[in-house]
Image (tube, rainbow, N blue to C red):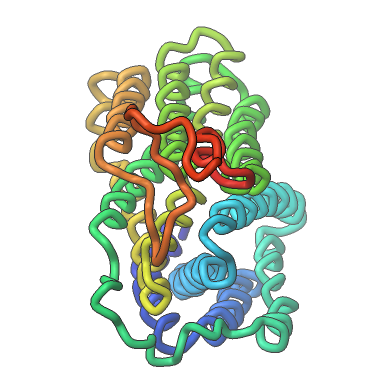
Length: 371
């Protein structure tokens, strides 16, 4: 029952992206919210486990539509220099709601296992706001617009960035699924303390994503992505070499900071690189890649866990994250999406001290510009 929605999210994101570009953003989001409420709350009165699994599978398509539509709308409504901050705000709010819903569902489950499914009805009050208050982006036509020769559908660099997202999401899910067993088996930590350690991961991720909204584009995508993978490298090293409860908490916080930086950064970067009439499909493809990354973990994680234990698994994860860090430095460059980029690449060269009366330092670091 837990994996059925994830499978349908991976499959439904591609369909959602196609529909977003051809039917419009608002209609897909409204339909997804309605399906989310109906099939998500089915557990309130469900008696047959098979029907419940089927409802969760359909529910996954609704989640795919909502996540893809909201990411696409943010890219439509905000300029590139604002987009990463808004993506960070979205990720932070999602994390905060996740913490609230976990606590609320646990409290509701004390009375009956049916009651937590009532939380999915929260989508119904949002429908009038979407249908009546959400404007359809003007630059996206129902047929997706015309493609010019200078606007390739999805650039090769977007595929490279998507691969980094595939790896990051896989590593993130690995620590979510394996760390609780690691804490209990290796350190004898009880359930309550394990819950606190896992919440450190979620809280650090949400706070880091929210901090991106405050930075307002002061750092380039490449720097943020490097920072994220470096945090994950140190976090997995701390888990693999940990000797105390405090080191474990630090490792979980570092991994949370890493994923909280990487997810909104990659979403914003791919949105900038993609023309508006292909943006829905690009966001859908990114969503699919993320969930495929989660599914890939059992394929190689267990192969390392059996012979080398948790230490070997986490140290390998640290090595993978560090290779991604180096690959970002070597393979990616800051984007110039549909115009001039505000990011500045710094390289050693001889330049004049002044040009047209303007000091060189002010030309490299203009006020309000990004580093």
